[in-house]
Length: 217
Image (cartoon, rainbow, N blue to C red):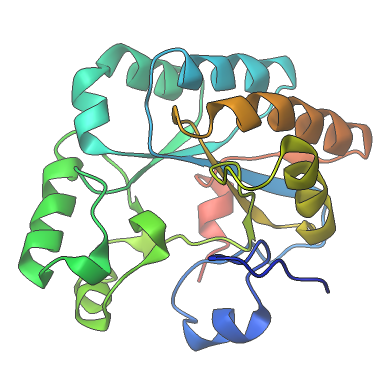
């Protein structure tokens, strides 16, 4: 397996996943199913465009929402829910766990939970301290990923982003995109191609809820 070494890894190596077995990295299946996730929204226009693309391919996804963005754009958040997608807590102010005191971090999650009702949590930047994680796991399933698309990375173009995804994705993969202003340009070039490519291979795209959640131990 080829890895992309920058400030992040496109494919999360198995040894990293094994160090944190209580986190959800992918779903255990050999069926042609993918789990698309979108972080940092909801953002008008960007999130709405994502929802249009998902609808076109009859795809469901999971949106890890920042609480203050839900407060600002409740209509976009309600559209996510009404169209059958799942949501998760992504803190209220997009907090970096490594740079935040434990109680401040937990309080920020609780603040987000007032607006995002979900058993799922994803830490911004994938960064948690052990003492934070211990508390969070008592209430949430911590959802990470095995494919980080890099749509937020200005040092790679859309073509490289797309091919990184194809090299790293397998059945059951959890992919991270961003419905954010920063990622918008690359996202709009890459997401339709990913949906089309895997749809033509017979894949379905599911949200991390219902039947999918029941498979997570």
